[in-house]
Image 1 (cartoon, rainbow, N blue to C red):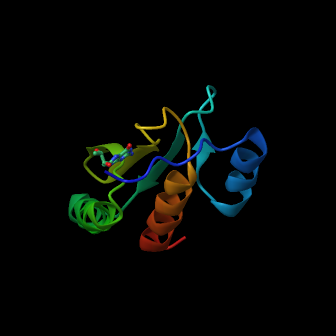
Image 2 (cartoon, rainbow, N blue to C red; image 1 turned 30 degrees about the vertical axis):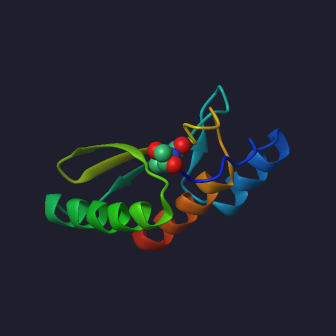
Length: 100
Ligand SMILES: C[C@H](O)[C@H](O)[C@H]1CNC2=NC(N)=NC(=O)C2=N1
């Protein structure tokens, strides 16, 4: 069980957006979302595989859907009921895997 992390403040959420290109905060402030498009399904699923292995290592997992070459991701900390530093950490790692 990963130690519960404190919820991000509104200021921390706003700062996250500048540090995390491509991500948005939902209107209720409780999740980060990003859409990614790849060349084809194989590239999209390969990306998802790499993210999955990293999420397991971080013990912090995305909520996501995949339609052919598109991946839609939502990040929130279920145990905290909103956004925590773990979501920022995973979003940053996802950006690195996606190439920015
Ligand atoms: C027991 C609990 O599922 C684990 O501590 C992890 C697993 N992955 C997780 N992922 C996310 N997004 N939120 C969590 O609270 C969470 N908890």
